[in-house]
Image 1 (spheres, rainbow, N blue to C red):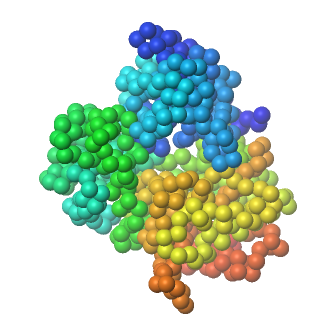
Image 2 (cartoon, rainbow, N blue to C red):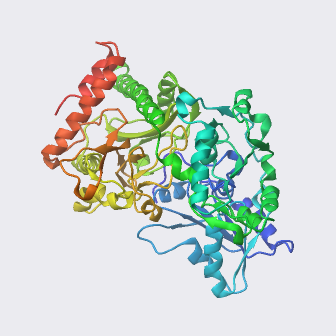
Image 3 (cartoon, rainbow, N blue to C red):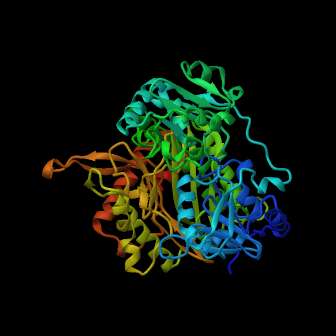
Length: 611
C-alpha cells in the first residue's frame, strides 16, 4: 500500500474502546453505531465541533460514513477518498469503496447484521430520507434503527472544540442582486405551487442566500448555523442573535429572530394544526421530520435550493469580475514559483504547504477577497494521486521539477466563488504523463466547447469528458463537474456534470454555474486534473428546431493551461484552435493588470503564446 508522504495514521484504539463500552451500556444496548460525516444541516463540510467521524476514525475527507460494532469498524467512502482514507486510518479500520462500479453500500452492510440487532444513530445527523431507506432495508431481517438523541461520540470526545462565535454580516445588494423581500416573493410562489403551507429550511447555504447573510462558522464556506421557517405571512430565523452585526439586524426587518435551539419546539407547535403541510428536502434530518410529523410533510427540493441555482445578473457580473482578480493572483503565484525554484536560487526548496500559503497570500491582495480559506490541494508526484489531498506543514513533500505538480484551489470573494485546478511539470514530463494530460485536456475542451439543448442534464454530458480517456482504457473516479454558489458553497447541488442520480433532476439553464474538471490518477505515481469554472450561457444557432433554445459554456476561470504537457499528435485542429482562443482570452483579460516587462507579464506572455 502506498502511503502519502509524511502522513501518520491516527491511533483510534482507545477511542473505539470508549465507543464500544458506551454501546454495551444498558442505557443504549446497541449492536452497531453509525457515525455520519454531516452535521445537523447535512453539510458536506462541517465545523470543527461537528467532525465526529474524523475524530473516531482519523479520516478527514468530506464524504464517508462509519459503522462501528463490537468487532468491526468500517468506513464507507467513494473513489475520491479511498487513497486518503488508507493513509489517515490505522489497522483498526476496514475501508469499503462505494459508488459507480461497486456493489457495496452502507445499507447493504447493515442488513447483514444478525437478526434482532439494534443500530444506533444520532437522528439530528442523518437525513430523514437515509433513515427511511435504512429502516426499509433492515426490517426484512428484523433489525431496528434506533434514534439516540445523545451523541455517543460527544460523551468521550476530550477537548471537543466549541462552535464558532464569529459574526454574521449582511451581504450588500451590490453583491447579492436581490433583497430578502424579493426572494421571499419567489419562495412563497413556489410554496403555493407545491400545495404547501410552509417551508422549513435547514441547509445553511439556502439560509445564507435567502437572507443575504454570510458568516464564518465553517472554515471552507461563508455560512453560519441557523434554521428558517417560511410561511405565507411569516418568516422566522433561528440563530444566535448576538452574532448578528447591527447592519445584519437592520436588514432583517419583519423577520422573527429566535434562538437556534428552538427549532424543534417551534416545529412541534406548527404541526399541531390539522392543515399544515411543510416542504422538507434532503437536507432535513430525521429529527426535524419527526418534529413535524411524517403525515405533515411534502418531500420536495427546497424553493431556496432551486432559485439560487440560476444566478441573477448582479451575481453573474460579480462572478466574471472576481475571476479576473483570481486569475491575476494565480499568475502571480505560478510566476513566483517558477522564478523562485529555477531562477533565483537553484538550491531553494519549497514545500507543498509553503506554496499553498503563498497562493493564498496573492489572493488576499485582491479586491473583495475574503479571509476564509478552503483546503488548497497543493500536491507533488504521488500525492497528486490523492484526489482531495491536503498538505500538512512539516511532513509534506517538496516541489520537485521532475514530478507532476497539481494545484486545486477555491477562493471566496464578496462578489463570487472561484474554483480552478492546474497541473504543471517544471522539468521533462514522460510520454505517458503527456498522453494522459492530453487526453484529459481533450475531454475538458469538448465539454467547454459543447453546444446542447436547453434543459439537458449534466448526467447526459458526463461521458463526453471521458471519451478520450476511455480510448486508452483509463478513467477517473469523480464527477466531471459540480455546481458552484455565488459567494456560497464551492460545491453547490443538485446540479453538476456526472453520474450522481440527482444530476438528472434539473436540466442546465442559462445562468447556472458549474465546474469542468476531468482528471486521471495513478496511485503512487501522479495525478492530473484541469478545471475551470464555467457559466451556462445562451448560444445562437442557425436553426432552433421545434423552438428549442441552445446553450454552451463560458469559461470564467482565467489562467494558462501548460502546453509543455501536451502531446500535439493527439490533438485535433479544433481543439488546438480552442486552446489558442482560450489563451488569447486569458492574455486579453489579465495582461493589463501587470506592468509591461515585469516577470509576471513575461511569464503570462510565454504561457499564452499560440501553439
